[in-house]
Image (cartoon, rainbow, N blue to C red; front, side, top):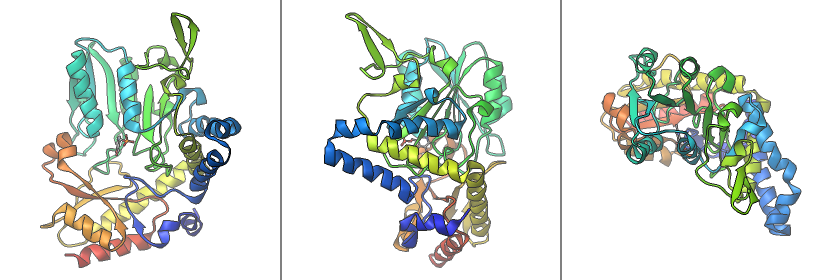
Length: 389
Ligand SMILES: Cc1ncc(COP(=O)(O)O)c(C=O)c1O
């Protein structure tokens, strides 16, 4: 990987250290170019007319994700963000009174609240599987809790508030064995971990564009396995997701686009397709390797700083590094780093109630690296942090 070249294509690298890739990463120049080109075309010739002449670039979105996830382009839909994609799929599942959904301790706040909403409105029961002492979802407890009422396993692959990579493929084996629907939130793993939906064994997978994929904000996607699509009833319909066949009937499309809206952010979709191509051209195994290696280096250096505690647990760790500085409020640390042009974020107790209550954690700091960050930046980060103490 030619880091100098990749950084030259990421102009902000000259001015700041961006360790907030789990929030939103920096887009490379070709992605920003694709976005602007389409917006300028809309300005020049009109929105609908620009849409007509860029059909190939729009179609590329589906092919790019097919390559990223090892699936058929017909199994991909463009959705404006990960939460929306996840909610649409949950609403589409054939769930009824008394059904159980199994989820994990590290679940993302909006995902878990959507489950709570579903429990309230459809009388569904939710079962949270705790993490084991390694910090990963306990596969034995998961297997033990399965009975004939369990209809869905809904899991976050890489949580936003800790470095763990949950064993998604092992969970997939359990879901397949018991013929249970399996929905994976890949919001933090897409673009940082090499994903293959067949190896994982999931029926559905969701994510957003702005995080490790380096796409624009306000973009996202979903994957729905072809054989699962017929079991799902999309919660809404429009003239793109379905055809109005007779006066009193309509038919949904026979691909994942049945979950899309006709009106959407066309420039964002084209640019996200370009971002996925960019990642695939670099090679996902190389991206994963560099990102996880850099994060391991950061953890190692942080552990050497007096009074700094690293909180990541797990057999397999991602580019997300969580830590706290003894005696210092997470907001103060975040702010001090920002004053030195270092972007990080905060993982808050209130938005991670299940996980942080069981680990007895307050708000903590999060530094999330990507392949375009450098060892030098890791050193500078630790020096600045150390000087604050
Ligand atoms: C693990 C995880 N899932 C889902 C989401 C929600 O993504 P979005 O804001 O695109 O809806 C996030 C956002 O941070 C996340 O970290």
